[in-house]
Image (cartoon, rainbow, N blue to C red; front, top):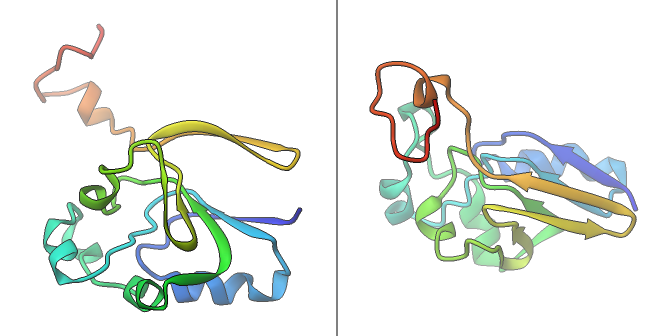
Length: 137
């Protein structure tokens, strides 16, 4: 099995699929900031810096109901958490496009992938922000 591993694409799905189209891969593992933003309503709920607040290319694939290459993605810190929070264990959003969920382990043939979704920011753990109960000193 040939797998392409792709980093943050911030809603540029067409560019991702074009970039791997000549590689003859069986699947894509996209490791965060996929931004499956369906429409303007999703965009208003997207918690991202202004430079990333754009509709992107996902609506095209959403309308088609499928993606050209089987794709699995890990939610990043700039993803559509409003939509994905309904599926904390993961979900197939459209045919061939799978949100993996917040954390887990999955076997793809002989490859075992483990993930934890999110973002580590030192400001959240060290600094002037309020420390929440789950933080340990």
